[in-house]
Image (cartoon, rainbow, N blue to C red; front, top):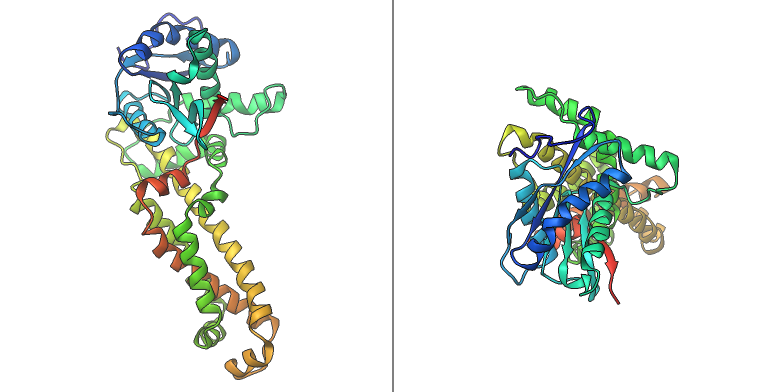
Length: 364
C-alpha cells in the first residue's frame, strides 16, 4: 500500500503527515507492532491540525556495531525510498551522549529520530517507547524553542506541520518548483536550520579551526600581506572574502557528501528541503567563523602590529581603516586555511559537526 493512501481516517480534508516506523528484527519489531497504532493516535490527539499515518516496516538497516550517525543515514535512505515525511527507527543498538546512555536521538534536518530499545528498561517498555517516540517526532518538527503552552508557538508548530504535509504542485521547470518549495516552506526551513545550531559548526571541527587560526597568525605578521591589504581596495577584499566563504562551504558539503540527489520526482521536495537546509547550515556556520576570525584579526592587528612598523611597511601613515583592511584580508586567508583543514577532517566528523542530534531522555 502507498504510504500516502489514507486508510480509515475521520477527516480526509486534513493534510497527512506520514511517520514511518522502522524496527530492527526481533524485540524492536515485536514492540513496534502495537506502537505504530498508539503513536498515530497520540500524535493525532496532540496535533489534530493534521492527519497522522504511521506505517511500520521491519528492517535491520545496518550491521552492528553502528553509531547513531549510521542509523540516521540508513533511516533517511528508507524515508526517501518510501516517500515518508518523517521516520523513527526503533533499534536494539545502545545510544550515548557524552558517554551517558539515552533513549533516543532526533535529527531535525534529516527528519529522522532513533529510539534505543535497551535504554527503555524491562518494565513499562511500551509506555516509555510511546512517550519517547512522541517526543522524537515533536523534536523533528520543532525549532527547539517551542513552548507547548504558548498559543503562538503552537500556531507556528501547526503551520510547520501543514507545510510538511503539503506537497507543492510538481513542475518540469526546476526553478518554478524550487520557488514553490521555498515560498511555501519558509517557516519549516528556518526551523530546520535553527534546530541544527549552525553557529557551532566551526567549534566542532578542530582541524579546520586550527588551520584557520594558524593561517591567520601567519598572515597578520607578514609585511607582504599588509601591502596587499592596502592595495586591494574594498571591492577586491569583498570578492576575496566571498570566495573564501564559498571555498570552505563547498569543501565541507562536497567533501563529506552531504548533498542529496533526488532519485524520483516524488521525493523532490524532501531532497530539496534537505539540500537547502544543509547549505544554509554550513553557510551560516562558516559566516560565524568568518566573523569571529575578523574580530580576532582586528584585535590582533591593533595590539601586535604597532603603528610605526605598520606605517613603514605600508609606505604611508597607517590609520584605523588600514587595520580594518588588514583584518579583512587576514580573516579571508584564514578562512581559506580553514578550508584546507576541513579537507583533512573525516566525513563522519564533518557530518556530526553539521548535523545536530537532540538527545531524548538521558538515563542515569
